[in-house]
Length: 307
Image (cartoon, rainbow, N blue to C red; front, side, top):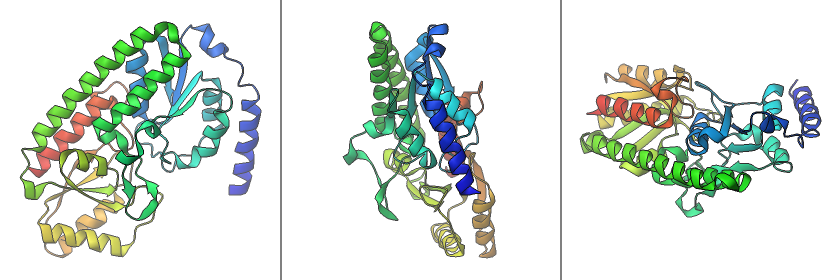
């Protein structure tokens, strides 16, 4: 079945790409048609591109990019786009071949790969893998914002000044959120600055704000976890007297609930501190459906539970 699906998608991709030279979608409404993967990237494009872009994000609320497989509809959207922005660093692991093929026909940017290599974190479980969750360190995410800016300017140099102005305003907003976050994190007692989540998506966050981060699964939700992993995390909770753990909007609660139950069996009461947005943002039209709203939600949830 997997082989058949791969052949089907491959054939569909080849058929669609053969028509990629047609940019009518962008010319009909005089806007640049941009397709992105995760919502965090779509938010950058909307803010930097402003009225000049029409943005279509493939991965909405609750979607796990590590496991995401593109449908034929997604391939159609990618083929009709004028520009494609995705995270890279193997976040969208199952879509790598698609992006490689699209890049031959149109501007296709893995924006997280614009971050200097020496600033990226290595997977402690696999020294050949890089942590792709860079959007949780705003200092690093600025590189991604500037990569989007530069990509739009290259495609549409006539509106360079506006893209530059929008980028400056957006980065200023991000820096305000960053300052708020640091102030709130500082209110958590040092011994309680331990963030326990379902998978290891918050290491950049921990690096930025001086928090220790523990995830049940590895960097990708594609990795397996076992009884030993649960037990090791339970021991950390008991030994450190950690009172709260957190679920994630794009991952099943089952894994973290196993940790909570394991702690209870050892006589240690742990609560679910709330839901965090990790690989996906909130619903469209809500505060959490924007990057800054998502970030503020996470900070408020973490600090309220750990103070």
